[in-house]
Length: 176
Image: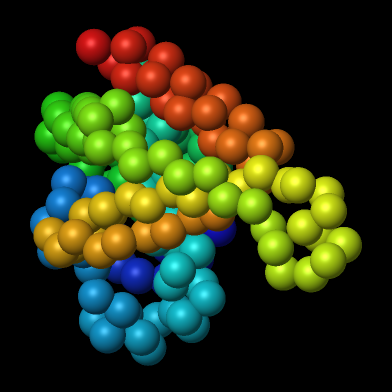
């Protein structure tokens, strides 16, 4: 989806990429209002997700410049070089932000659990199944503010979450 990046001049592309990195590092991300004439809301959200994912992948997996340029093959060469220049300039900052975020998630997942086991009792048929559910309450920091998130999971969903957390832990250990 990064191909829509061609709609802005090179200097705006560099500025946008720096703002995306700012958002990735916990500072002020780019504002949709600044680019509303250039992209639709859906294109804007997909572009932000694509650029954020590209920066995370490039830094988290230590991807070479050639591989980054290959991922940006749909983008004009001047725009690809602009993205690459921002990546080169802020690689260490992105790396620190990814480590900080992963460490925060790891420490939060290891420290503050309040386990509660509930039975689904919404009807006679469901209550007879005795389906165990996990209610997980998380405090998520988003744009500097903590907001509570509650998830209710069955056994399969819990297993998938644990696998995801184990994979994230492996990535953290590789980044260290």
